[in-house]
Length: 477
Image 1: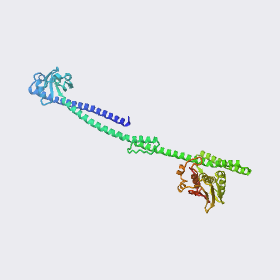
Image 2: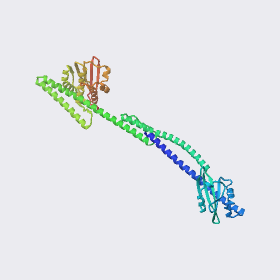
Image 3: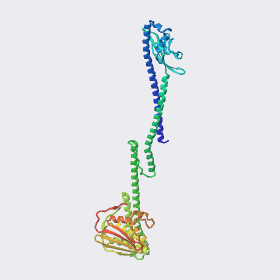
């Protein structure tokens, strides 16, 4: 059973019990009040009738004993009952009714007469076949002696009719109040359950990972506090999930970048190892061993750097700038890639001149490796032309190929993260190189641009600063 129905049934039972209790209390109180009022009225009549009886004794010059005798008692009873709505009886000291203004003697009990002859007023309610009668008996004392008593019989049928009419009115009003109360209870339960229902729907959305639902409650009560707490919880969960997603994305990107960069020294090591098998001169073999050792050392440094960043929890590529000869870095990088170029049947033309710039040699070498490897893997070229030129405040490295080129739209989207995510991932390409190159160049204060035309080849321009940049940064994802 739903909570709303439970509340409605609970309110209904409470209201019905309250109305029933009110009915019993009101009926009992009213009935008792009417009996007490009639008893007081009859007691007042007894006082008046006592005075009237004594006046008759004085006027008629009769004795008290004659007043309560069979000769005078019936007349006095009829006289006293005139113009009243009750029956009057007189009884003697033996308890015998000697005067009666009516004909209900056979229906009456005599316990009230016994109490009156004992010196106490008595009230008795008795029921006949078709009526209900209130009996009031009081002793008549004269000179300290009980010489008889007066007895009054009041028909309570009119009282019962009044009570019955009152009960009908009460039941009608109670049913109306019950209907109104039930409607109000139903509306109130709906008002209470509405925000709870909204909370239930919001919790269902939370279970499927949707935290956008907010609950609005205008009332100033516990339901409002519950709604506010839920909204705060939902916002906190949303923030935590976004933070976890961001951290997960950051870790993935860092892992992808690292694995991408580990490929270059491994490729060079494999390439020089293959060349050794084909060489006969000892000097050439030693030269290959030098580059194998150099790339192995670089690979080891990259692994150690990765371990350090993992221990520190700092997933970032740090850039440490120093003044270096860009021509030497370019020549050395091209020499390391020589086995790969030879394997791909690509010839090169290198034109350099000394150029001192502020760079991070390792990161700059990463950029050169990525740019040249992209040309080897994707351009379908047969020749690379690499030229280093020095300007007033910058040095430019121009890497041109005679490959298939790119359309203007594809060239413009090369450095877009969305473009790199959409590129197919294969054993030769992970779509990370150029985006990483752009970030590394910007952290060194430089820049990278690409110019390409379909079937006309591609030119990549790397710009380096000859003066130290104002700030040094780190690449975080």
